[in-house]
Image (cartoon, rainbow, N blue to C red; front, side):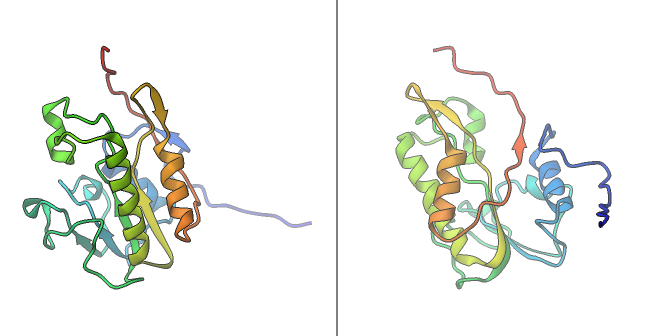
Length: 188
């Protein structure tokens, strides 16, 4: 016989939880051990930096396509200026909203204020996953934010599609963190 002991995490990180913002979610990801202070982390889509408001690694390289939101200079997350296998962890919060057209003034900070087809937006996100996978070290971590959505009368399962994209380039899906939120649905 053997005994197995586990140290209880305070507070526990739930499989499905509600967070006030992405910074709390990233702190939970760090608590789970996917991110560590000593990691060299690339945030390929830094934006307003909300992911890093609660927890932050010692070395964070932060880019965005918008120079005003890029502490370490502008960079396109589909064509990063780094060698293969350069980072311990990479985070990607691509413009995953698939509505195909701007619907709210809040869309601009997230890069989804330009009219586009949902298929093109999905392809952009896939290309970003492939590029971010290229610069993460073997054994490293790639965190991708996405959302399943109803578009053009059908559910578009980004979680499945993006997971399959990562697997196709040699990554292994090890976890899924569900961030509960509510967004008002279109009236049509």
